[in-house]
Image 1 (tube, rainbow, N blue to C red):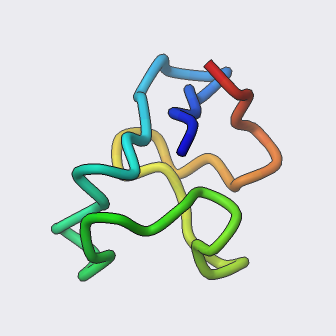
Image 2: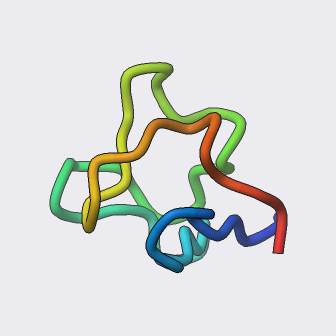
Amino acid sequence: MDNYVCDLCGYVYDPSVGDPDTDIEPGTAFEDLPEDWVCPICGAGKVDFSKE
């Protein structure tokens, strides 16, 4: 699974870690995140992320 980086703030979504602050389990691919998921640092939407 690929890491994705927020184009606005540089936060890296790492699927091996998930997003524990929003109950996203480790092993969740970026593509499988809910459509309303946002960057935990700046609030950017999934459209503002690029594959690292």
